[in-house]
Length: 158
Image (cartoon, rainbow, N blue to C red; front, side, top):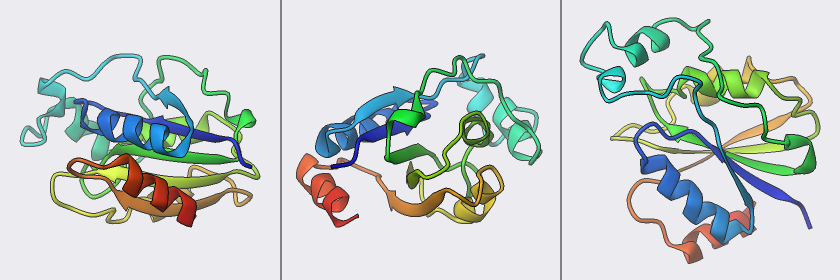
C-alpha cells in the first residue's frame, strides 16, 4: 500500500476545499503550499496587467518564494499536486515547489480548480521543473462540490 500526500496551493480557498476532500477520500496526508508573501485580492486581479499574479504569469522564469520547505515528500510514493489554473497553466509557485524537492521515483498526479478552462498546457509547462525520474500525469479538474465517494473511486482507478 502506497503512502499518499495531497499537496496544494490555494490563493482563495477554492482549491483548499477540493484538496481536503481528496485527502480524506484517499487516506492521504495534507500539505499546504504557501507563498512567503501571501496573495491579496488585488494580487489576484487578472484584469490588471500590473497585478502580482499577472506579472508572475507573464514571466516563465518567475519563482515565488515558499513560506517553508516542510513537505517531507521523501515519505510518499504518490503525491497529488493541486492548484488553481491561472492563464491556462499552473501558478508559478507550483514550479517553485517542484524545484525545491527531490521527487525521483515518485508518482505525481495533478488536480486543479478552474473558472472555466481545463489543464491547458500545464503538464508540458511543469515537466521542465522535475527530473525525468518522476512520473507526472494530468489528473482531474475538481470544480464544484466533490464527493468523497467519487474521489475515492478515482484514486482507486489510479
